Length: 230
Length: 225
View (spheres, chains in turn red, green):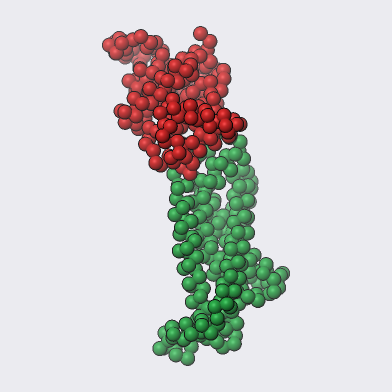
């Protein structure tokens, strides 16, 4: 399978603080890769480097295609409606308005937020705002979508709805990298899960979770725990 | 006060009678002149402040320059501006009061906008970057609209000051406006007229605040995060 993201021996530090050291990763086209690790280990830093909004000290990062990064915190312009936010993204990317409007309707349908399009961010729930943020990035028609802790702060129903939306996007063939500190949030949507552990962080294990039952996943995690890989 | 200084301070009734004697037409004309001087001066100050903050956002040397300029302008007394502009433009021209108001409102607006730049949600800049916006697009679509609540709050102070300063500038050298008639009344010994014009100014400021500034400030709250 063709790799669309390749990361080799990536090293990143903030001053004296070495955050990532020797990170290796490959993501295939159409794959959903989950990255799991404790808070503050460097998952968000890794995503920002892949998205090209942050530099790195050494190593090799190659990305094939356009990348859209959905940041950890929802950032929507409060003076615009959800539709207005997405239209602004389209305008910046140079997408004609008619094309953008049709795409927004299609994406809103996939994400289940059609009824909220003409509301302002302050009028919708956290889950809907998060989906609107994803829509804003998808309007740019990225080949790869990076989602940084998309489930943080959401209630159980919103998490399930967002997972369903991510699965719909996956079925449409979108390549995604989803970062979380909770493996349970990733198990149902990811093809593989990379464990970013230790400090400075490195990928200690990549687990293929396709076809694994909950019991098998738990056994794999336990085995990894014993071997200090997760 | 009126009882303590009956020869100096008119009673409220005398003041109202004086307003009647001045006449609605003259009051309306004077108020319109003062409003025009104040609003035009405010708009000049606003335009300069917006240009300054835009330049400051895109260039750190410009930021340092306008920060220093702001301090300099704030340290110059309004009296100095009034005298200098009257010397340059004379008492007949409307430019002097307008420019005095601009000089008074510019530092207030610029300080408000600089404060907004510092306080503004840094995430807007991140969002702009994630969407691939140019520096210009970032300024136009993310930063300037985000400043609107701060600008409205600063404008509320600036317009209040603009009205007060405009009256002072008109008093110094102008041929119309509330300030001009207030000083004229004093010069001719029409003490009830002085209080009548002062009352007109107070009423004007209250009306502008309640009818214009407060509703605009409430409207701007939707811009807040």
